[in-house]
Image (tube, rainbow, N blue to C red; front, top):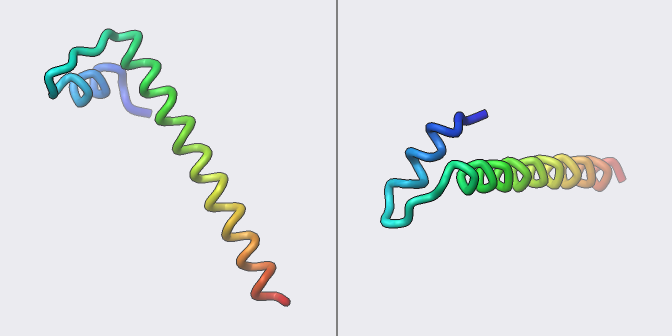
Length: 54
């Protein structure tokens, strides 16, 4: 997991300045998206294996 400090450094490189709370929320949202993508990839892989077995 990335630290809040590193996330803040990355996010605050542009013109917009994010508060620590906003950085935490963005990080949480991105981790959730990544988790969903991993699950979707696993499901797709499982479905492909089932199709190949037919």
